[in-house]
Length: 266
Image (cartoon, rainbow, N blue to C red; front, side, top):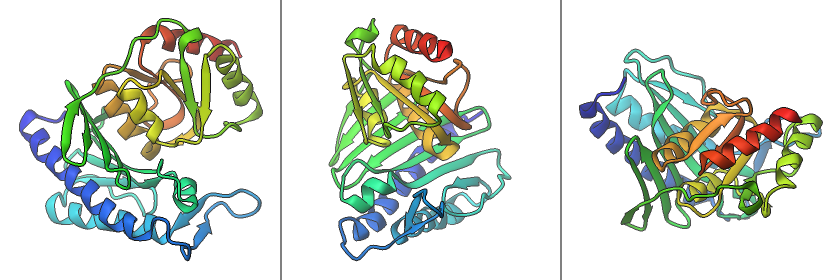
């Protein structure tokens, strides 16, 4: 459990990490000579670049200096076990496919977890200059230094909902069928927004995000931000999803329940 005194320091460090990652990642964004390696191999494509690796190294260097006893779970380097009970969950560039394509919907994800789920989260998009921050009782949108509180919006029925997901080819064939059962009920479905979709949900612009095959570093920061803004994030069975898997994020519990029912039936 994170105390209030600890939280003040941890929030300050989280913003420092986001600033450092932004400074590095922007050096590489929209550079035509940036090379993407394929972590997946074969016909699958899971890109990683110098920007991903350098941004994570920059964040880890700060943590080694300021929070040496904390653990680190990051996408690009080996996990560091925690001696303090606190773990930083880092995705230096969530949406590397968007990054290498020049689309400004990628972001840096930072979460703080004391073993019972993420308690602090940041979704940062440095090129646009938008940062979504969340901790229990406080959710904020920060745009080029201007800060304002944010909250999810009401949506009582799927028929009025806007649904986002990163890939139309979500998960397995069975998972795609389940997703389509929800999408067909929604007013609008859009794809390709990566972590930015979770920020839009937290600020009341959209109603649902449904994804599959997530890692812990993909979802912990969005959970913290969305829950702070009054939303709900679970797996497709309604249980915790902060360790990764299949996620349903919603601004309204009624829409969330309707989506879950369809996903379970499918």
